[in-house]
Length: 183
Length: 183
Image (cartoon, rainbow over all chains, first blue to last red; front, side):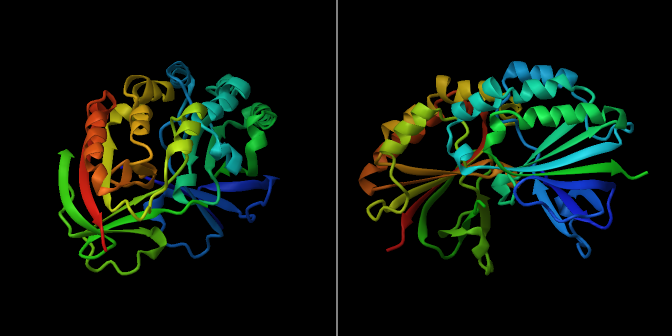
C-alpha cells in the first residue's frame, strides 16, 4: 500500500523557512520551519500551524520515452549537498479537471513542455511530486525541489519558465515556500 | 475539495448482499449488507466488518471524443428501477503502475477497449469509478454498477468481456459483490 507524506509547518522541523510567498490566490501562514514526515507519524501536533498531505504516486502524463529519459538523469531527494529546497503547493482550476486526458496531456507537454523544461535542469534540481487532490486536500499537488545553493539561479529560471506556460493559466492557487536544510 | 465515499460491509445498510465472490486473490469477508456513505459519516462502526474508501475523481484515460460519447449516453447512479448493483474492488499489479501513461492507455483502450466495452451497455448499466490507491487502501479501485434485474444477463456479458482483456492480466486481486437495493 502507498504511504502518505505530511508537510508540517510550525516552529520546528528539519527545514528552516527562508520565505513564504503567495504566487496566485491565498498564501499559507508564515512559519519558521517545515518538517516532512510519513503521515503515520502525525502524533504531537501542538505547535503546528498547517499540515498538507500528499501521496507520491504513478506519473499521469509521461510517456515511456520521457520516463526513460527522466530516470536516466534525475537524482533522488536527500543529497547532502542539496541544502536548499522549494515546496510549491498548487491547485488547478475546475476547468483543468473537467478536461479529458488527451486535452490535459496536450497542454501539459505538447504546448507547455512541462517535462522538457524540468529535464533541462537535471540532475542539479531534484524533484518529487505529491498528489493531494484525491485526499481531499486544499491543494491538488505539492512539488518538493532540492538543489545546491549554487543552483538557486537555475531554479529561478525553472519556475519562471513553468509559470510562463499555458498550463499555468489553469493554476488558481500557488504558494512558493523556500527552505534551507537545518545543519 | 473532493469528498470521499465509504463502502461499509456489515449487518445493516441500504443494500443487501446477494453474493461475495473472490475473482482473483483474497476475498473480502462475507457480510449481509453494504452501506455507501460520505466518509465524514463514519461515526458508529461497531458492527462493521470492513470499510473501503474511494474517491470519485477525474478520468485518467478517456479522450475528449470518448468522454463526450460517454456523457451523452450514461445515466447516474440512484435510478429507482435499478435495484441491482455490483461492487467490484480491484487491485492491479506493480507492473501496471510502473508503466508510463502511454503504455497504460494503449493496454486500457487500444488493446482492451475498456471504454468501448462499457459503452455497449449504456444506458442500461450505470457505473461510477472510485479511486482508492492514493488513499493507501488495500484496493486500487472500487467500481459500483447499477442496473435493473432484467439487465442482469447483460451485466454478466459486460464483466466477462472485461475479464477477458489484456488489461485484466494486470489485476492481482478482484472481489465481486452483488447486491439488491433494500425496499
